[in-house]
Image (cartoon, rainbow over all chains, first blue to last red; front, side):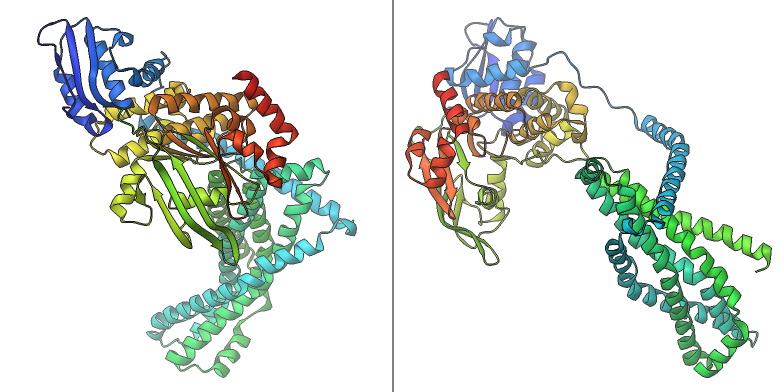
Length: 369
Length: 264
């Protein structure tokens, strides 16, 4: 038997086409070329010489028949191949056409439009959620029976204690880099001693809180969004509501309260670690020993600087907790949406933290604090 | 498909299979033969290792001991042979396992593109559309993302992808789970039609008694880490084992079996 698939006009009757060989997916590419170059009108198609036939082959046979003006049902075929051909004919176009997808520029413009249109809605949603959570906080504050102590302590461990090594390490390194940078610039003026002012001021006033908030925005906001998002997609939130439990009290408040407590503590640790980093660099490359460093710190550092920095901490804590939880609640059924929301939580909380910090810096400078 | 050997030939042959997770032994000395052209059902209690068996046969999980041959090739053999076997098998996972970032039609095109990169794009598209219609979806469903489909439609789309390159052997993991009875019956019909049209061998894990009675030629019961019994349903129903008796003579089984017998 000839294995290469072919179609040709019957040598004796010009009104009959003969298909032969294996009409299979392996030969589909060659067969497609053969079919486009073959055009003959005929009354019948005899495919009984076809060896193996699969659904691609059947699809090609149907096409060949249609091109030659033969009804596909009239193709002559071996009996055992008949069910396949029938299935393919039955499945051939039901008239309903797959809609064409829009061009890329159209989709891009649509995305820009959707984003712009949703911006106001998202802002409203966020403010509404903050209001809802704060009112729940105030309501629960006077009812100790509704306090979720275990859950809150657990969140404190997760968001605070477990983040401590990371926060301390990163702050120490950045403190060292700032001191090193300061030393390079200030040495030219013979003002090495101001490295102490620079490091300490930077960390107690700005960097301690900001760095901690950024680390927590990456670490904790994403965790909140993923935890609550997974619960949402498994209908746990719905289950809570049918039991008369308030998801805001159960899930959001412990996280928010834990962050409000832990962020100032972490920020203080970060400030101390940053100072330690600066002290190390001063001792190693500037010959400012720890005693000298500390006495300079006593001269320059006001409690004011520390309090100005710390004042922002609760605000950052609320922003991070709110963004993380809200993005979690926005999750719809799929696992993909959990990923999208988690990313969005990190992006939003980091951006918000930096924007708020800039506004606060201007505010405090203008007030002269 | 036409020159199929009439004599029974084992498409899947498992000998002495042993699977364990740490100290928990799932399979111990499991033997199994699936013959060409049959629809072979595997049943068993929850946690009896049905899915682990399928994952082992598919080569997704290397067993601790034993040999597995699929289509005459050992699955722990050379990569070339394994890829040849993969081309001749299709798998439908429990929830379809469609790639979520691709549309249904693109999903169906993936195996065609992987195994037959030379095929012209227009033919590939037409073949994907054909498969989508063959599993009973409308052509407009091809442009949708998996997330936009209902559970039943996702299973059909998954079947279209599994059948994309006309495999000889089809693996189905609980194809009717999560479908309503009408949808499940339609899916059974669809499988029977596909088997007839494409000459498939089907390895099927199920809990659905209706599916067992409607389309399975042979059934294996898995329990105690091995195949307790394998054969036509009439033989299995008589098998003397507590779980088997409970399963095939419980109230639901009587309804399914009775419906099947009165229907045939």
